[in-house]
Image (cartoon, rainbow, N blue to C red; front, side, top):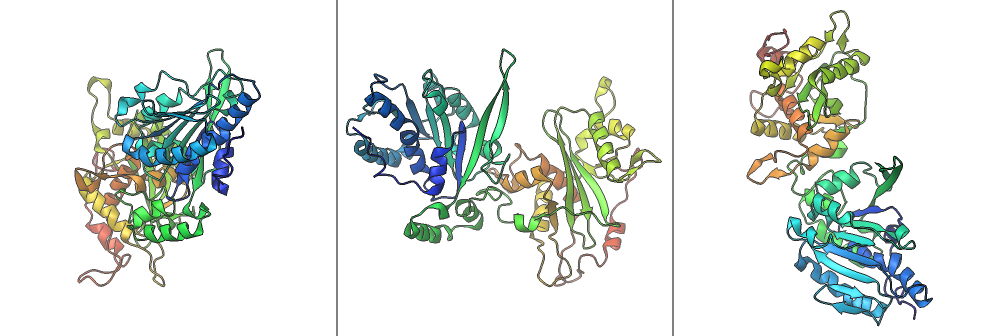
Length: 489
C-alpha cells in the first residue's frame, strides 16, 4: 500500500521550503493566510511518516517508533485542526486509527501522531515522560518559553534512521516576546541559520541550529482566497494590519508605539554627525539586567537622532565608564588634555545612591574615570507623551526640515528592535508596560525629557518654528552645577 498524500496536498513554494528544512528548530512565521497551520499538520507526514511506512512495508521494522505531537494552547483551538487531520489522514492511510482518550492517530506502520494542549503554564509536565521525533507549536507566541524548552528537550530517538529527521517546528503571527527574541531578532530577514555551541561533558563542542522562515499572504497560491483575505485584513487598525498582512515584527498589535513608530521614517541610515550639532548621552543602569548607554545628536531643527548605543551585562561602574571612554576617545568626544568626556547627559538617579560601607556611588566611580552624568527627569507618563510627540513630528514634503522629531540610526539595533514592540500597560493605558526589555525605552525617555521638543509648526498662537529660537530655549533651561561641575550629582 502506498500512502495517498500527494493527491491531497500540494505545498506552495514557501511551504515546500518549510518541509525541506533540515535545521532542528524552525519558526515558520509572518502574516496571516499563507498556510502555516496546514504546513504544520502535513510536515510529519512528509518528513517522517512516508519514510517509516516504506520501512515497514519493506519489512525493515515491525512498527515505527516515530511519534509527532502538535500543540495548541487550549483544546478549543485544536478543533478545526483535528477536523482537517481526520479528513486527510483517513484518506492518506485507510488503516489509520484514532484514540479520543489520547487524541492520537496511529498509522498502519505504527507511527503515532498526537495532538495536545497546555492551557496552564505547567501542563507541559503531562508530556515530559515521552519521547517525540517531531514537535509542533501552532501559534507559538501563545506558549511560554518554559513550555517550549521543556518539551523541546523531549525531541529524541534511539532509531538511527529517525535521529537525523528530528524536528521542532513553530508557526505563528508576529507578536512581542520570546519567539521574536529567539528566532527573529538574530536574523530579522530570515533564512539564516543561527548556531548555538553546546559544550559536552567530554569537552567536545556540538552545534545546534535554529532558523526563521518568513511567510506572507502573497505566498498563498490561491489567488481568490488571497484577494478576499487581503481586503479583510486591510480593514483592521494599522498596527494589526502591518503585523497580520505584511508580517511585520517591528510594529506589533497591542504595542504602545505601534501606530506612531514607522521604521521607514524613524530608522535612518548611518551618517557622520555634522560639526556644531549638540551631542549628549543617556544611561539606564543595570548590572544583571541590561546596562544601556545611548548617544544623541540634536540637529539644527531640534530633532533628536540616536547615533550610537552600547549594551552590556555583568559589568561594574568602572568597567562601563572605561568602555565609554574608549568609545568616545575613538570618536573625538573625549577631552584628552583634561582626561574627561566632552559630553554629559541624563541617567537614572539610582546611580547617585551611595552604597554605605561598600564605597562610593556608581556616579562617583564613573566620574573618577571622567564620565559624568546629570540626574534624569523620571516621570514615565510625561516621558511617554514626549516621546509620542516627537514620533508624530514627521517630515513634510517640501518643508525645510527633513527628519522626524526623533530617529535612530540603523546601527542602534536593540533600540530599534525593542521600543516599537513594547506592550501597553494593561493597568494604565497611558504608558508602556514596565519590565522586560524596556531598558532602551527608558534611556530614550531620559533623552526626550532632557531635550523637550518645540512643536514643528507655525499655527499655534505664540509658537515659532522649531529651530528659530533654539538658543533662547536653551537659555531658559535651568543650568545646574553639581559635585563634578557637570550636573546634580
